[in-house]
Amino acid sequence: PPPTSIMKLSLSVLAAALASANAFTASPTNAAFSRSSVVLEASRNKNKIASRSKWAAARGYGAADADASDVAAGLMTNDDGLEYVRLANAKGDTSDVYLLGGVVTSYITEGQNYIAVRPDAKMDGSKPISGGLSHCWPQFGPGEIQQHGFARNVNWTVKSMTDTTVELEMAPSDYTKEIWDKEFLCTFSVALEDDKLSTKMFVENKGEESFDFQSALHSYFTVSAMENLSIAGSFAGKEFLNKMVGDEGEMQTEDREEITISEEYDRVYTGVNDPVLKDTGTGKSLTVANTAGYEDTVLWNPYGDEGMGYNNFVCVESVKFNPVTVEGGASWTGDMSLSAGDL
View 1 (cartoon, one colour):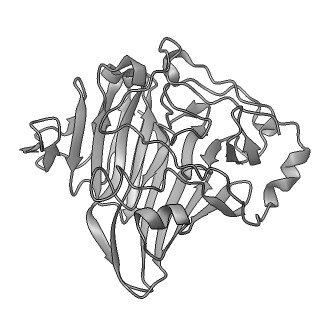
View 2 (cartoon, helix red, strand yellow):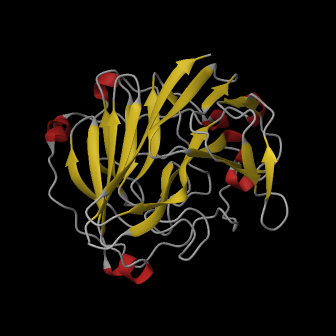
View 3 (tube, one colour):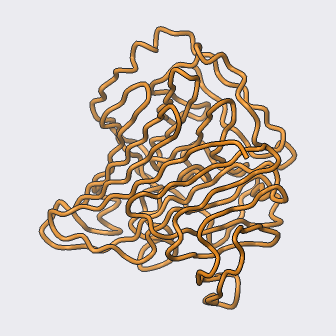
C-alpha cells in the first residue's frame, strides 16, 4: 500500500530533538521482528483505491479532507518503513496504530484529529515515537529500570485485526528480560467505534511469582493553541505533585475547577481520572474516560519549547501511579476511551 503522511504539529516549527526528563530514549537494536499470523478481515480493503487524507497542518490540528468511502483499513507502511494498522469505519473516522511501541498516533472523527504527534518525532524506528497514546510500562517515569519502561521501545505483534479493531501483543524477549525478567504477556486492544475510540491494556502474569508494575498512557492531544485550552474534571480540592518545584517536587492543592496552562507543566493528580479537554479554538471537547485500572492523571506540557511544538499539544496522561501487584496467574486491565463533542 502507498505510504502515508504523519501529521506534524506546526508548519512553523522545525523538528528538533531535546533531551529532558520526558524525552524518549533510543530504541533497542532488535528492530527486526516477525509478525504473528493476522486475522485479516480487513484484507478486502486492499482492493480499494486508498485515498490518503491530507491534513491541514495550520496550527497542527487540521481536518481530513478525504472522501470517507475511499479510506481503506489494513496493515500499512509509512514513508520511513514503519508498519502501522489503519482502522476505518463507515462514517469515515480513522485511527492509526503503530507496531513500534503499540502507539496510537491519530484519531480522526468528523474531520478533526484529536491525537498529536510532536514535530520532533522520529517516525523511522530510530527512537520511540514522541506522541500519540504512548505506553509507559512496566514503569512510569524514572526508577529502577529505564525511564518509562520498555513497552514503547519494542515492536508489538498483531494478534488479530478487523476494519475497526486491532489487538496487539507484547511478550518477553531477550531484550526485555535483560531489563525486567518477568513472565508477562501484554495485550493492547483498540476499537474504532461510531462514537468513540476505545483502548484496553490487559496485563497477564504467566508465571508463578508475583510482580509489581506501573502503567500509563502518555497521551498527547491536539490543541489549537494553549490559550484556547482548559481541562475540566474533579481537580478542585485535590492534592497534586508539582514536579516543577524543587528537586523532588512539592505537594500542592488545586483550587481550580478547570485547569489552564500558561507555564511549563508536570503535575501528578492522584485520584483524578475524569479529564475533559475543551478547545475554544476548534469549538470541540474531548472526554477521556478511564473506566478501569487508570486512577490518576498527569498533565504535562513543555511550555515555551518551540522545538517540541508546545503550543499545539497537551499531555493528559492516564496513569496507575501506585504500583500494581499481580499474583501468578492473575491479570490487570486498564480501560481508556476518547469521545469527541461540541462545546
